[in-house]
Length: 198
Image (cartoon, rainbow, N blue to C red; front, side, top):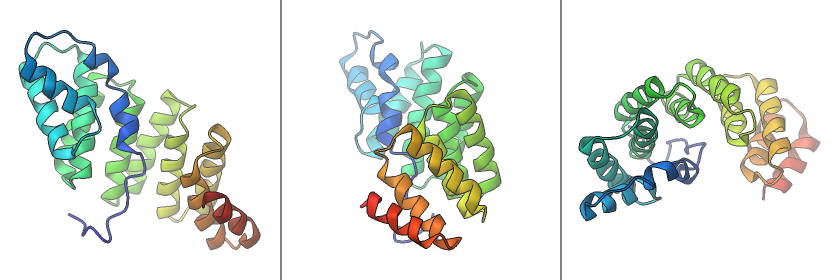
């Protein structure tokens, strides 16, 4: 586990992914305990409660492959927040097997790969996420982060450009592009991005 003060932040906010579980929350159940655990799995609560909730939902069974994929993606995200990269990768690999069209699962696995310093693998996952959902600015931003970590600053800047094009309010992308532009010597443009990202 990377020490807290040096661990890179997760490029994708978990709340974005937790919102994707809406289809799971619509499942009917007469069991109040399971209902509470479904809420934990589908909500932005602590990572530990998310793992507990999603695990209970998985163990109960009865999920469609897509619902199970979303549940695994949420639990994998929680494992990632907790620094359990093995748990995250196991869940995200399984989620992708169940739903190979889940941009969220590919994107989150890309985040896990990036945090494990496997940036070539992270980029491959982000490429797939972008192919599935080319309108998600977070996937471009996250792929840009991996490109920059890999030393490919121009590719990173191009991805930040697209993230900003898709969502001009994405302060994170401005901040990341500021850093990349400063490294390649585009100081005026970097300063403008830094100011925009504040």
